[in-house]
Image (cartoon, rainbow, N blue to C red; front, side, top):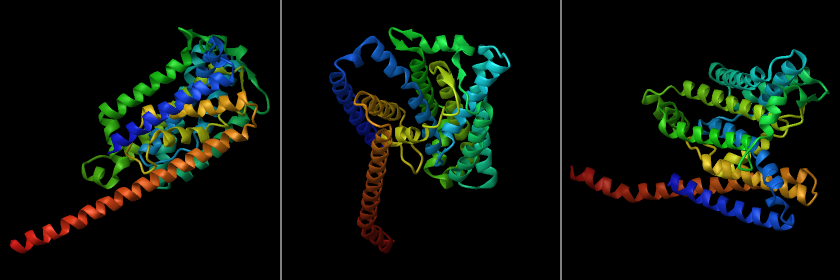
Length: 336
């Protein structure tokens, strides 16, 4: 039933993406389909995909990560400062966001496990700390991308007209999909998110799954920070500041259940594309940026409400099925 629902959700999102792309292409007079339009669209789609995947992994284990943007922001800021102020080579500087993201995610996971405090509270606290660290690193200045020209060149690189950083985001999505389905750690993580007590009885460490989920989430935030370094003209305190809502929107709209135990990589990628289309429409029709948050927030709220209705209906069907089976069970017991 879950696979059927996710498949239906993906088909719906594909239809939305196709229709939205056609309408925006017409509204832009064909500019969206020009080489520059295609390159720009996909270039700025990479980060929504990565942060959506980052949030999806924590939701799959029954957790939330409010520090997605803060992790990416401080990772990008630290790398930028090291390369600009201390002369760290760009090749080494490119590894900094990945390391910072993974370590920050690992810290979040361990804090959740050691304190037994809900991940919502833990990541809210770490988000505040990391935002302060980001401001301490860059202050009010913007560190220019001229300090990491090789990375900026990668950000401009294309393969058959498609930005290389977008292909990297797609590759990350493929890795996440394969890991969640074919690796033991991925299956255990989903088992912990679906039913922690049953997973414990099967010998699965729920604590290890939580730590793994947060670490993987942090690593993907680090990849998003690296993509931002490559794609943006500079890094300042605003990097990562608008990541939180899209990070939730992509997996939730994509079909991931907030109760945990499921992943929807294709749905998350498609939903991130829808979010990008909304942002493109805002720019095309010169709407206020607040409209993007309004539309995305409304869609997320509607999706959550619909998911809840589905859960209630499924529970009622299961209750009705148990009620129908009860007389047969009583008759069998009487016969014995």
